[in-house]
Image (tube, rainbow, N blue to C red):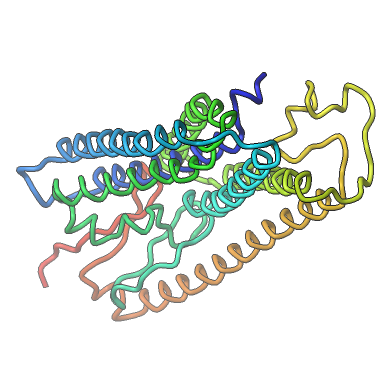
Length: 353
């Protein structure tokens, strides 16, 4: 019964997109709160926060209207598919969800400041920012939240457009993913409840990350736990999707089977582990895709970690060169640590020459 009304792939997609949208909103709020010298006295910081709220609401509503306008005709005009087609769509959707979760697993440590971001060198006279937890350059914002926006783009029009466009894009991506479900009679039943659950999970995680960035000094354990959890879920979805396609196009050899109701993947307690790739039997393809995808994820995380180490080394060298005579002493700009948030903020030395 639960599988008829809840689809884990749909939950995953909505959770991912809403999480990214919440991260974007959180970053714009951080930029506004950390702006010491607000550039527009007629458009206050309180007005900017209201603009973010209304831009987000309007973007979500308009994106849902577009999704409904596409989904309703497809659901009405579509023909009933046979079981093979339904299994194929389900398998592809799980694979796509697995890829999305792997991307999210790689992004979370970056959002939390554990993996360093590649910074754009703006001036040789400005030292790289420092993250107090990791001693590295730290930039929480996504690519659409640049420093230029924080300094020169804090107008009502720019804030509204950037927030609305990014939130609309995230929600609309959910609709694109759901098109195959609208073409099936059974699959569409699972969309509403799954979308609500996924949206709630994504919003909750996004809010948790926002407050974690403001309160936690060392976010490495949090990043490790969440990244590992998402990687396991990604692996389970990917191998499960491949197994669905296997059922359609031909099964590989069954290597082993667990007998007994306790081990059944469709019954408690073991069904709880199904999202992480559990099955009461294993085929050759299941084994190959599970361990192959897990190894790929670990390899990508290792690559990200190595790149972060290199970035931190470059930042250390830049700070060393900046602290030499003629460096920070003669610079008009410097960087200090925001003790409340544990993050770096840029200040301007107002001392006359």
